[in-house]
Length: 246
Image 1 (tube, rainbow, N blue to C red):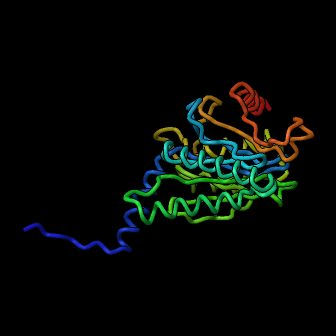
Image 2: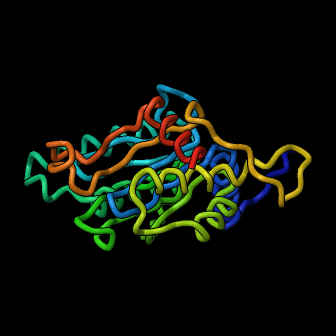
Image 3: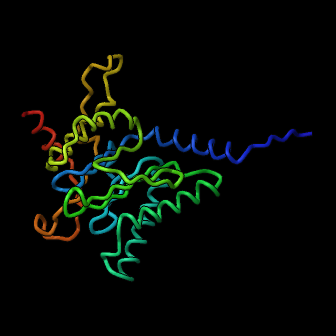
């Protein structure tokens, strides 16, 4: 006779949450932070084609950590939602808050009804006219939403990166300074093997990073309403190298 074990709904939810957290923690971190010129999105990502950062709509960006196929399906769904809403109503009706709510419903439904939760963590961000008007929403695997201020960190050793940003983030920084701040915070997890915590972190080169920005005033700076812009490897390498020479 086969012995059957009863698993309570509470234990089942806990097991699913632990499973998702472990999967997310294995991924490399992403930092999103506000600054004077807009919002900078910086990810530790050596892949030139499997992007963690993306544009969703005119002033809305997307960042993710976890399983690529899962957050890529969510990214595509978000773009379709934004396009349909903007076409059916107006472009002003597409907001990061509305998109975050849709993602929360999808993630929450998968977490409670499917056999396996999504192993993802998302950020949906919208650049405003000034830093106080920026919106940063972080979504967890279970559909919970956090309305963040100033910056948010996902994946990997997020606590270490958060501590580094708490010491160095500056709202009045321009894009180059904000990007360098994010890169140094990400590098805080890369202490040399066998070294103590007081040792300097190993630097992150441009080839290990994916960087994008949401311009606060793209119409005057680049002649377009689309705020999202990727920073290519050549430009990023020059930006990081100039900081080392200062």
